[in-house]
Structures are given as structure tokens and as C-alpha cells.
Amino acid sequence: MHKITTIIFDMDGTVLNTLDDLTDSVNYVFSKFGLPTRSRDEYRQFFGNGIGYAMKCAAPEGTPDSLIEEMIPVFKEYYDIHCLDKTGPYEGIIDLMKELRNSGCKMAIVSNKIDSAVKELNERFFSEYVSVAIGERPGVNRKPAPDMVSAALSELGSSPDEAVYIGDSEVDLMTAKNSNLPCIAVLWGFRGKEFLIKNGASAFAKTPEDIISYLTA
Image (cartoon, rainbow, N blue to C red):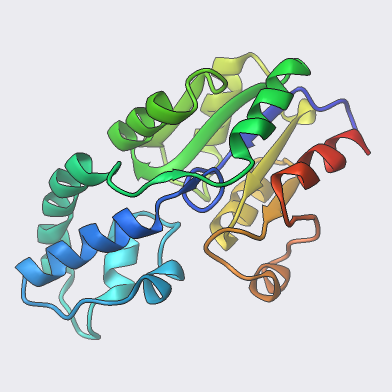
């Protein structure tokens, strides 16, 4: 393996525990539109592929796509206001980023969240360490397309052969594969280990410290 100089992180379920605020925001929208709400454990399996996909999965079977499209801007407006109510970094993430920065690594976050929320959350929690944060925006295909990763590597001045991708879902595994990057799957996020193995994961981190062990092996 080439020397790793660049770390590309997913956001939700990887560096930030956003599950409660996402759950509350979707349930707010569902209530507003007369749909049944769901628990955070039910939502856990739906997030990771953009809010439209999550809502479609969580809505009752047969819910028209037109209604999902109508709900998305309502979600965005509410979530922009409430995305910091309960959200925070997972334990050990700040220490990990500090250690990576001190060793000279460059870092980026790529997420299928709305770009404005990704940038706001990065500014709030990680701006001391992470210089590039890219979310869903016009003209850039969402993950698992490699576009966000390519854009992040370009902004950082890095090449794929010196980078590693870190995420928590099947979307992240496919994103890494499509970007020709090795992937470390974290086990504290939105998916379980058996699910990740079935989706091709082979390197795992039970704690943020395991990522350092992987990079220095």
C-alpha cells in the first residue's frame, strides 16, 4: 500500500451521530403530511443514500413519489434549523482527527446530506481538522458515484493511491469501490457488521483508534 496521506470520511454514522436529529426531522414531516412516524432504530437502516431515499423507505408502501418530492423541501427547511439539536461527534473522533492532522494527513468529508447542512456541521465540529466538506448539490452526482470523492481529492491536491475512505454503510463501500479507494467500515454507525460483510466489507474499525492501527500497519 502507498503511504496514506489523505482520509475521506463519510459524515452520518461515521464521524457524526446524527440519527436523533434526522429521526426527529423526518417524523416532523411525516406528522405534518399525515403519515405514521417511525422509531430511530427503524430509521437507522434507511439513512445513507439521501433524504429522498430514506423517506421513500420509511413511508407506507404505495406512498406516491410526488408526495415524497413535496416533503423533501419541508424536511430541508426543518432540518436546517434543527440539525444541531442532538447531533455530535462520536466518542474518539476528535482525538482521531487531531492525531491524523498531527501526522500530516489531509481530511475531507463527503456526504449525501444537503450541502448546506454538511458545511454547517463541518464548520461547527471539525473545521480545525477537515478542510473540505461536500454534500448533495446540483452538478455533482450523489454517492455511490465517485464524483464527491473526486472533487474532494482535487480540492485537497491528493491522488487516489494515497487516500483511504472511511464509512459505515453499503453506500460507502460502493463509493470507495467506484473511487478505487480502500475502505474501512466503522462498526459504531448505522449498519451492523454482518450486513457490511455481506456488502463486501473486509476492513473494520470497532473504535476510532483502530483506524490509526490500520493506517500504521
